Every structure is written in C-alpha cells, then in structure tokens.
Image 1 (cartoon, helix red, strand yellow):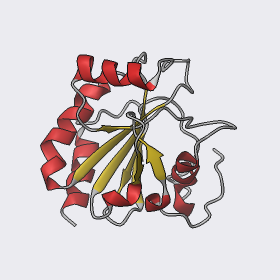
Image 2: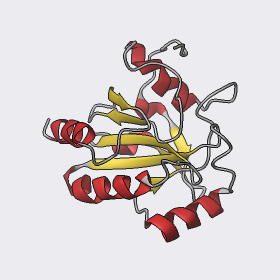
Image 3: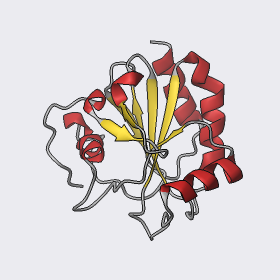
Image 4: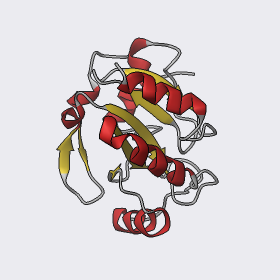
Length: 170
C-alpha cells in the first residue's frame, strides 16, 4: 500500500463544504470523537447508513460526531449531485449526522483531507489508499487518527463500538 507522505497537518486544519454548500472548519470538532466515512448511494454497503445513524444517535450526546463524504471513486456508485445524495440519505436512511459535498477519496484528484487520512499521520498501520466505499477512520478528541476500519466492518460492530466508547471515555 502506498500513500502520500505525512507532512504534519492536523485533522483540524481542513475546511470542508457541507452537502448544503456551507464551508465549515473541522476544528469545530475539537474535543469530540469523529468517525469519518466515505459513502456511496449505490453500493452493496450502502445499508451501513443505518448502522452509522444508530451509532451516531447512541453516542452523539457523549461527544461522537460522524461525518460522511460521498465519493464516486469506486464503481461509479455515487453519481448523483449533492442535492440528490442529500435527498437519498434523508428519505431512505433518515441520516441526521453531518454529510459533506462529494469529493474524491482516491487517485490523482484525491482531496487533501483524504491525502491526510491515508497518510496515517506517519503510522504505517493506518496508512494506505481507501480500498472501497464505507471505509472508516476514527479520530480522537485531539484530532489524531486512532484506528481505521475496512468496508466490511459494520458501524455497530463490537470492534467499532468498543473503540468509540474507549475514545469517548478518555
């Protein structure tokens, strides 16, 4: 697996556009535990929106934030506009966690946030290209990447729930 070299950025250094077109700085999540997920509407894993929403509802009052980044990098499974994606997420899965504008998470046009995430912040175990939709990065209250989960790890799995609870308890 190859990735961009880590150049000392912080998760909080990025300003991203929400699915509604509003620019927000990720530094608003300081002191929160954040699960970052690249999502797609027409993927076999799209049903994970249900688990992501369950996880968010269960732990949001304890400081968990889930942020979704639609991406069309894998099998053209996210072809829609931001408005279409927002409508799909709200009508089909009742998503209430923060969704962002569609970005690229892999390849020549990979967004700088994903260059940062796939660098693993210098940790080879966390580094490497995103392999498919619904890959998850867990960010601690200090903005550090603490774990990463492949697409087949369900949001409400013991593995993710235990890690989220561990980070929230710190």
